[in-house]
Structure formats: C-alpha cells, structure tokens
Image (cartoon, one colour):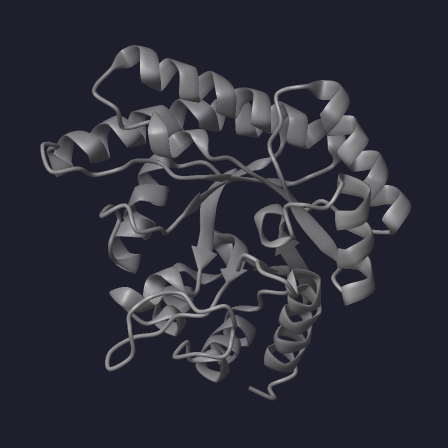
Length: 265
C-alpha cells in the first residue's frame, strides 16, 4: 500500500519545492498534484517531485464543479471536456496514471435522468482519450447528489464500458449515505483506480469533516474490505492542513495513515 497526499492538503503558503520536501520528510510516497494549464509549470512540478523522490500518481481538477460535464449548456460541457482531454494528455506525459473527475452535478432545477444521460455521454467521449493515452479517468463519489449508491455507481461505469474509466473512491464522502466497506466490496478491485482518505463525523457529532483521520470512519472495516478485494495502490489523504501548525499536521496525517494501514486504528 502506498501513502499519498493531495496538493490541496499541503500548506498553501509554501513554494512548490517546499511542498514536495515537506511531503517527503513526512513519509509519503506520492503527491496528487493540481492540474495546470501551462506545460512548463507541469514539467516543473514533475521535476521537483523526482528530485524529492516522490511519485505523482494522479492529477486533480476543479473546473467540473463550476462548469460540470452534465451542464445544460453545450459550451460549458465542451470547455470542460477539452480541459479533461488536456489533463489526460498531461498526466500521460509526466507518468501519472489517473485523473480525478466529477462526472455530473445535480441542482434544484435539474432532472436526474438528464444529468445521468448527459454525464454518461460526456464520459464516454473522454474515454476515447483515456484509452488513447492509457491514463485512467477516475470518477469520484462526492456530495453532488449524483450516483448515490455503489450499485448505481457500478452501473454507470459499466455503461461507459471502458477499462480506462473507473472509480476514485472517497472513504469519508461515502459515510453520509452509506458504508465505505460495502462500496469497496461492491465495486471491487476492477472498478477502483484510487482511494481518498479523510475523516468524517456523523450524528450525534456535528456532521462534517474534521482535521484528522481519526473519526467515525470505520477504518478497520475499510482495510478489511481493501485487503479482501486485493487493492494495493495509493491511499491519498485529502484534508487541508491549515493554521499556525499546518506543516506539523502533514506529519500527523502521515502517522495516522500509517497506523490505519498497519491495522492500529
């Protein structure tokens, strides 16, 4: 099992080389880097990761929230599709094997059927590029009121029908409306490309995401499920390290993740 951390979980006030140095010293194996539009910046991030002895297993995008692939507006869909085509190509050029994607976003005036059908059509289009460059487009389960059960998630992936479109499973996100260990077993190793880890607090606590992995997330059951399906890829921390001791929190997250992997939590 490899330990990773999201770019957005590293203190934002550090220079890129300082971020990679901090992550390496904290004991992580890789960094999920933000997507960039400038190729020079992209290759600079790759160079800094190599110098620090770190892998870049995946890229993370944010445009899919503001202009989702399920949008009613063709121009928005086209813009986001083009962005993801570039992301997949960039990932291939720096040796990352996964690009995170949110396939659709529900809103009060939307039709679930339309969101589903539109997202499916767009992901099928992106699958062509994913297959060409041999980089997995990994769909994340997020709080977008869409693909709310593991059965529906698997159905969506099956309907896309590409070996290069899989799930980016988020353990914390799934706790609001399901059980992460059940999601993992239902999807199986064939469907899961990467796994995000974060804490989650449920009733009677204040529902939300704490600044720690130690929470109401059932890590022992999750690790049992992970071992059952034979997953041995990255577990990537997605918790923002903020405040006066932000750098120390990166070390803390690494220690917590090691304990989870070793079965100590």
